[in-house]
Length: 116
Length: 211
Image (cartoon, rainbow over all chains, first blue to last red; front, top):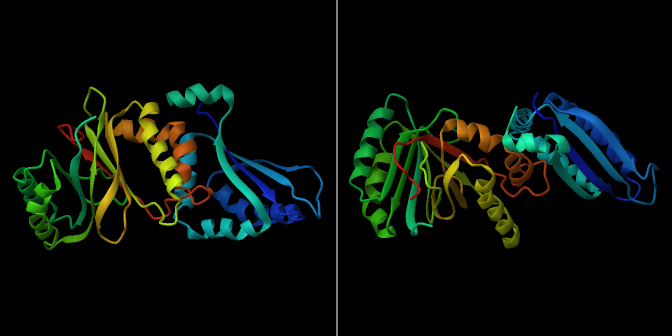
């Protein structure tokens, strides 16, 4: 069984923009991500208050069944210039953004040995 | 470390019916070019934007290339050659004690607005990859001096791999690639600095190339 791969988008919104960001992310970005093979695992808002005058941190976690599935996902998305444009446009709601790729601690050794 | 050499790479798109003749002409030219190492080979079909023929020559110094450059240019202008992309650069390869059976070159363009310290971090991470991927048997990362074709390539990252499986498997599937280095190429990541399509080209080789 291949190790799952997690894609984590962590953003800090501009004050009062968290709800708008989450709505747009789920409506505009998520459907294409699902088509590219990602499964949405969680959308966490911290603190869990829709502030109108303060930033929120939003952490969105996706999963893919294997490193190969991660490559297939990114190969599907990379030729599409709209994807990069979407991230550029959504930046108007954000102060910071970071995407990272992770795995379960128990899977790290197997992933580095590249066992399926 | 091996001595610094002057290196030339050309990736040629050639009509299928003309490909053997063009390859033969390039091989003959390479054989008498005085190059210390030479590759003229059809590219593996899993190459991406990598041309149909891969030509790579390593000279002791630039004058060696300049003496034969016009002859290579003439072959690149033959009927049936539909596109040529290429680079010249200098560099020093790093080697493990064994040679590979697959030579791979990656041509890439770092965006011109990239701060130098960011480009240096990117280069450091590329250089670190062989520490994690033991199917890379030799490697060289170089900055480009001149280009041929529409893309203003800035870097060349070359490797010899154990075999094609060592490239398509461990190199691609190790987390150092997809969870660390690839973010420089990923338009969904804020660290992206390589926005143009890369040229990823590889072929089988019988003799060491990066030495």
